[in-house]
Length: 165
Image (cartoon, rainbow, N blue to C red):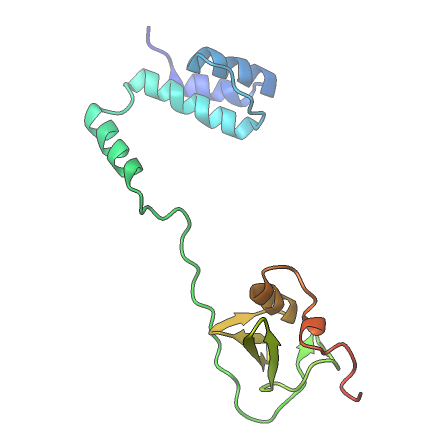
């Protein structure tokens, strides 16, 4: 018996989540714990289409299995490099939220701190902080990158007081 896939898919959109879970069990032959309505609709629609059209060919299925076995397959795309040149010119106070933060030194300054036998050097940029070729939005982000745990950046670099102190 041939089913009308577009009509069936349209009917799925009108079903409640409980009805979709029951339809999933009917179509796949096993229950689901999912309650995500859009996901259920997509999965059931895919299965209905596969049943009506015949699914993947044996050759396509074998190729998919070959690709799935590839161990060096990248799961997450690489991040683009974050780099911003250190500005040259007249030093200015770094503005945070549109206002200069009195705790921060002028743009172009280098903050230095020893941490676990390692010298941490951070350059103050006009919009962020440069550390090891990356630009971070805040000192706390740099401190987290260095320590591996959340840490107040001003505290980490001993900038807790005002600049006049």
